[in-house]
Length: 256
Image (cartoon, rainbow, N blue to C red; front, side):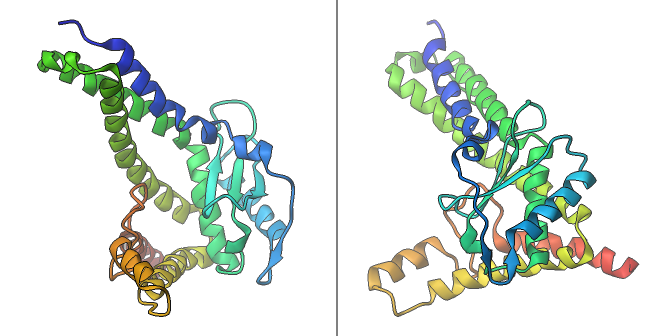
């Protein structure tokens, strides 16, 4: 029985398409230029830190820095591989929650994604894995080709999403460690304190008994007792990140 290449390629193409908006930095073109001063931190001070970090990471293009209320936190946009804009979008509500040292680490982390072309890597690798795996399944199990085109596309897309999760978690760890290496000592300490703040905020929300009972149940289902958000499959847990960053800090402290 012939391999159903068309629906397989369509499913793999959908995986790749899901990463194209960030690869080509569409939010940088849609968000207006705004400048927020909040919690004593000026966004323009953070933009100056980006220039320093950009130089350290040898990123050859300018990096835009824009507010986006639709962003959950911070998000890298663009790559160094393709011409055109690259930058970081962030939710201004985060400005009051973290110090400048903590922000420096976050900015370095996002710049590492841009420097490594991670947005493109997510899409290409996950799409290729999905297509190759589904073709292999159809060869090993010829009855697979009897499924509807929709089922084959869905299977391919699902395999691609699983691959994307695995690749994303790996690249997040790489970006954390690379960012830690180029940050100032204050930002290295800030990296750990920032994730501790985030984790503690999740613990407080999980244990908040003033919210409706159904919300309490939902928070306990989605957040572990350690403050790790179970639904965030694309990133390592807060506990894991604090652990390996603490290990990286120990040699730095000893050498100083």
